[in-house]
Amino acid sequence: MIVDGKTGFVGSDSQKALQAISEAAKTPKTAVDLRCGGAPSTLLVRTDGPAADADVALAIGENGLQSNVTRGENRGRLMAHAGVARHIAVIGRAKKRQRFSAQPRLAIEKGWRRENLSAVVFLQDRTSRRILGAGHIALSACAVNY
Image (tube, rainbow, N blue to C red):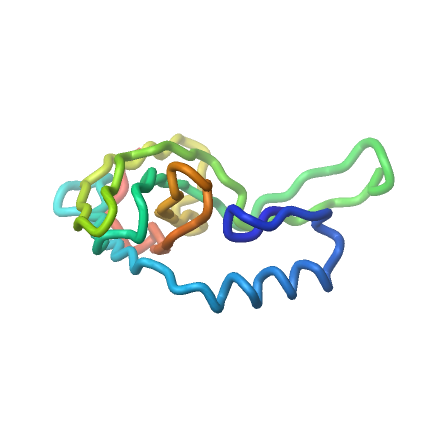
């Protein structure tokens, strides 16, 4: 598991996870405003200037997925998955202390369940790779074409 693009550890270490998340929550972040776009299958992304030059990335995630495990310690189990990244792409670059806006087109594939989809946009420092800000929106609220 990696928290805030900074702290990495084995994901099953719940105490380390809680500690890293608590520390990350104390760090000021740049607000990222996400709204449904004016055109179908688009998103409006706006942010004030981050503390450093940053890549602006868009991730499409899906909840409610399952898989049958056929090997390993979980063999024979039906595993539920949430927040599965279906698509991740850099949609732009935000300059230090300058506003950024974009209207990316959403790449939604057939077979993905719209009611379970969300978009996350995050700002990642181009040098340190730390997360400088993030925003989230449920895509069920937007007009998304397949």
